[in-house]
Amino acid sequence: MKVLITGSGGREHALAWACARSPLVDQVLLAPGNGGTAQAYRNLPVAADDPHTVLEAALEHEVGLVVLGPEASVAAGVGDALREHGVPVFGPGRDAGRIETSKAYAKELMAEARIPTAAYGIFEDATAAAAFSEQFEGRVAVKADGLAQGKGVVLADSVREVEDIAREMIEGRAFGDAGARIVVEEQLSGREVSIFGITDGERVVTWPPARDFKRAGEGDTGPNTGGMGAYSPPKDAGHDVLDLVQERVLEPTVRVLRERGTPYRGVIFAGLMLTAAGPKVLEFNCRFGDPETQVLLPRIDGDLVPLLLGAARGDLTGARPHWSRDYAVGVVVASGGYPGSYQTGLPITGLDTLNSGTLVFHAGTRLEPETGAVVTAGGRVLTVVACAAGLEEARQRAQAEAARVAFPGAFHRRDIAEESTSA
Image (cartoon, rainbow, N blue to C red):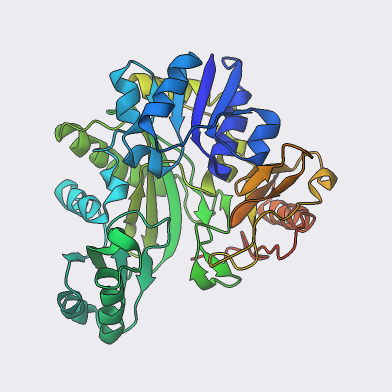
């Protein structure tokens, strides 16, 4: 069987690596992939958010499964186009994917399903948003309603700050049309955790937790990014937390989507805050997380593909993946200046010096066809992953290996998986 994965990031490289290990899979294709996937699999000159060309590629190459990588594929309706032509696809349709593409839609769904989350308001007026925040003394999160590449959330500490942020989003279009409408919600206290649920539209298989590090600087300082690293499993999210999340978050979400006539097949990514009152949802994503996927897939003890196929076909009966007890730590090596402006086309060295047990998942890389050299092509360049029986051992290995990767301006956080610093 051939598997086609849409996208070009570290998440997609990790999915390709996991699918390629399956005895069911003869070939892995990526649309469009990156420099790392070009070395190990087959990249296609196909945009991840173009339903027509993805469908053409799936039919031409006679793929048995398409896995939607980024949210852009879902938002563009790639899953809908594939399903209309009988192609098995892991990933929701555009309507069900609104749990990520519209934060307002997600909050309203949570209210209907009685899913624990922060108190919120939805606004298209900065003055009204600021007035709402007064009940929380201005300590709120201001979120662009639409997709903003993981960067459309700004924390405020005063009512005046709320109005300034809201005005910048709504009137100044700081995040383009994604911020024309905003969600303002109370800031929750606790520790963040990411939990994935694989669903066939009815049943949910909950995965172990992971924790990512969103800010660019050590000690959780600096601007928000797409994620500077992750680890799994965090020690404060045990089976009791997973059971609560499955019962109170994931299963009600799937049920309400099904009742609305938009059944969901794929992965629901719940970003949660572990508060004193229990887990509360910060946001939903309609795809695997990045960089969480890079530390979760190496912990699967078995074959990923039957799980993806079961969800795509609408039948996860009996699907129960097994997980290694090892810890996995992933450290993102980023371009200097990220998440702001940065240079690309820089040669990457040190990849051939890494230890054999180290995993490297490329994201912002490109393979130069004439020389075969791998160069930078994005902000988050790659994720270096190490596994070990203890968290500290895995953390030290990942840090040591990430330090071997070099290009001008390269940087990485040295505190990834230090549990005292994650938030």
